[in-house]
Length: 215
Length: 215
DNA sequence: TCGGTAAGCTGACGTCATGACAGGACAAGT
DNA sequence: ACTTGTCCTGTCATGACGTCAGCTTACCGA
View 1 (spheres, helix red, strand yellow):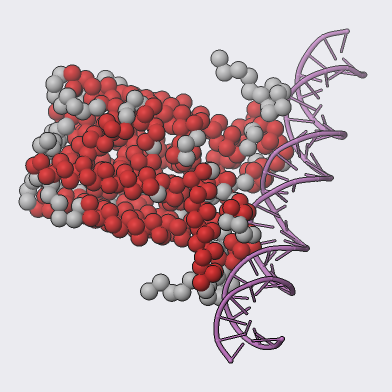
View 2 (cartoon, rainbow over the protein chains, first blue to last red; view 1 turned 60 degrees about the vertical axis):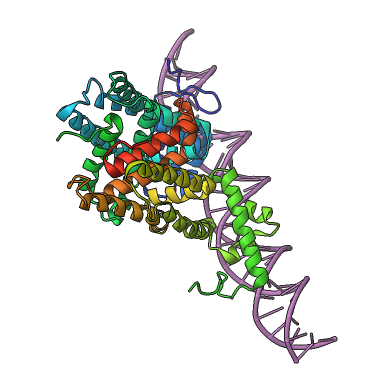
């Protein structure tokens, strides 16, 4: 399915080529974690990977192109987030647990891929379709499951008719992502990490079910 | 309070100087709206302002420095957001109205300053203290009011003891900001603007009061 | 074993942005 | 007209960008 990996000038990358390619991606990832996106230069990535800038341009059209590649790998990983909601109940104590585990899992995922997700978010906010589709791809699994959960409760009459499941689910997922990105900001507001999570879970539970959780 | 405007090399800027300085800021603002942050170059800003790069460097150390300046102006504007909550009630129908107006006002503000806020968000997420303090400054007025509202309801026993007012308020404000930045993404999820707002207001109301609104 | 071929890498180069400086242009007061 | 201080720009060294030709390396079939 995934056609062979190709260089910019059309050659097929072999064993060695794929290795350097991956090394460049890894180094780019590290650079993104340690310096502002705006200051990440091809020449630095290449140096860190022990190769030359020309080599970088053999595999990627530019920094952005390489970033998209990394984000693609993260997106594949993100599909696994759906498991956090697979077959979970939103009723009673189980519902509270579901909310907590969702928050926990989501925050972990975001923290782990923090640097790249930041850049994807920026690209999406700037209106770049490629980034914005990637952001969809990353969030779709969770968002879809959450939307389904709300819709199901709504069908059972346990959630108001005028709630738009996708709007609520999307807002909650967006909230989780943004809070994860700005966790440091919360400490300035006098909120510790440990306090943040249960309150987020509360908001998620409230949003999905319309009711306070049973703890 | 705001000491005189100074050039990088220490001279005081006069009438004309301040005008070009402001023009550079305006042009930078426009550039930020029309092209990715990463690609905004000093030379382009200068050209657009009908001046030379050297002039830019007379007033700002670099692009980032100028961005901080713009953000500062926006922050001053953002203080006005507190009005959206000043003396409002969260009880009954009035509470629903308060939530709706908060969402409306906040989204408008964010949309209006969209480009610069995007960059501030990025800087804050990257851990740059200057951006991150600026983000505080912008959100503090709303966040403070919202925290107070939750705390007050809590004092009256209408909100659970184990809710952390600042955590809930911060999460809600962060949600509003992020949703505003990614409104386009919601249309891809089949959610129209008009549908989004009431659902956001619902989430805000639920978060603050713990109850569904009376409509 | 020995070319032949394609993959892989880099030095070198023209182009362009950066950031610093010195000096010219300009407005205002005398 | 002349001085003074503000304001702007031409110019330059430095360094990143992105391309290309060409060298090296690995693989493969005869």
